[in-house]
Image (tube, rainbow, N blue to C red; front, side):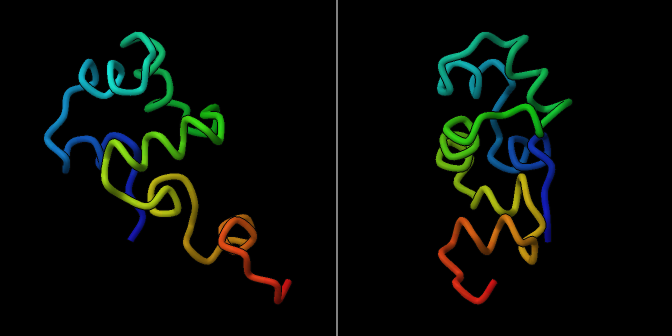
Length: 77
């Protein structure tokens, strides 16, 4: 199952403001990341996965995607 950034945040029971503070950005920047998650930098994606307690694959990528396998060290590509 793949979750949107908003769904992951809501499952964790956090507000946009709380996640923004933990990420070190203002609320408007975080709100934009929820709307346009493809604009997140890799470092932000990893931080968000830690904050939300969910693999960034589940939030940002389809678990079967090529990018997902590359970031997990799959050498069969």
